[in-house]
Length: 119
Image 1 (cartoon, rainbow, N blue to C red):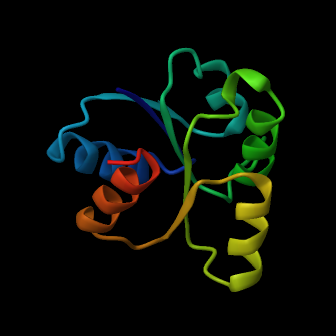
Image 2: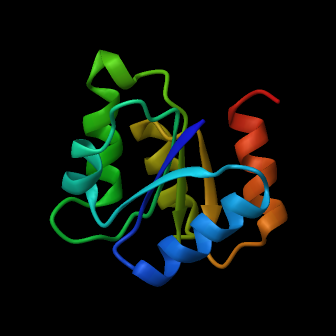
Image 3: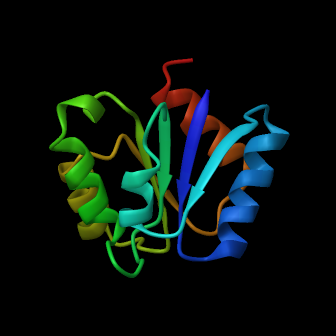
């Protein structure tokens, strides 16, 4: 399964990638913002994206993906520091499948991935 992790922090991308590897997901592609992520969507089956990024933020990225019929069924998990109920509702309305607030545990990431993949 090909997973795309989108975050402007290379450290956070590395943490997510290492966590994914530990729970058995080894095909992980990285992008540093939404524009970069759009260019790397070919074959992606799950997206983990931050909200606050330069060039194209996570919410705009989610809305852009959801407006393309090719990606309407790709699960998207927002992984962000935005923890207010208003932001969570806004992200869900935009089309995210689930939401994780940073910092998170490997178990939380695993549970959310299993949930959105229906496993």
